[in-house]
Each structure stands twice: as structure tokens, then as C-alpha cells.
Length: 187
Image (cartoon, rainbow, N blue to C red; front, top):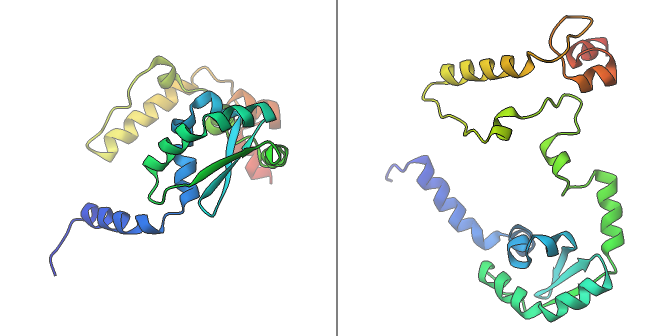
């Protein structure tokens, strides 16, 4: 038995497990690329039954429009799939049901929920706003030192917690009147 690097072993396992990949997973991964970002906001793949993809649309108009584009979308999807689809069916019937599910668990496509902007502890992302690249560090100590400097710089302008006098995001003070650490100690 020869010794292989962990990366080679993982690549082999990944290649071997492709046959087990569910077609719906792959469709969801490449849907935006196949239909475009604007169309993707009005559509959602729902299921695959007998090699036919069922897609919910936000309106009957979108269902009709996409029915005309069906062949092109099918070609783009089949280029990405191990088992080709035979057809695509568009319907607005399931859209309301999907919208209700999204409202119960939060809008998964919302950029604010994905990034955490609506969380009380959110203080912003200065480096992303400036377009800076994240530096790579050779040693964990250097990365930790950089992280502490960035965190201290970012929190310098924040108000102080009235209980522990630590810099605290405004959202935490608005929500609990104290920082999240002090609030957790009270629970």
C-alpha cells in the first residue's frame, strides 16, 4: 500500500462520490448561472421527477416566458449534470407555498441575513468596504496579532458597556442596554 497525501485521498473520494450526488443539489448549485441572476430571483427549482425538472415561478407570466426559453436552459443545465434532464416544467402554483416557508425561516436569499448585518453585534466590515485583500500569514501567532489589531481598531469608535466598560456594538446596547457578554452572564 502506497502512502498518499491527504489532498490526493480527498480528491479521489470526491471523484468517487460524484455518482452518489443528488441531481437536485447540482441543479441548485448551477441554477443562477443557467438562467441568470434576474430570472433566478423569480424562479426556484422544486423537484426532479422522472428526469423532469419542476420549477416554481413568481407569476404565470414568468412561467410562460421561461417555457419559451426551456430548451436553452435545459442545454445549459445538462452540460453541468451527470444524468441529463429530459424536460423542464414551469408553474406558479408552488411559489406562494415556497414564499411562506421562506418567511418562516427567514429569507435565504437576503444579503443582509447572509452577511449578518441585521444581528445586534454587527459592527460593519471596514476591510471589505475598502476592498482590501486579506493578508496570508505563515504563523498563527502573526494572524492572531493582526486580528487583535484590526478588532481593536474597529471597536475604538464604539460606545462603552455601562456594566463592564468594554467597547460594545450599538445594536447590543439598543437591544439589551449592556454588551452581549454581560447579558449572557445575567441569563
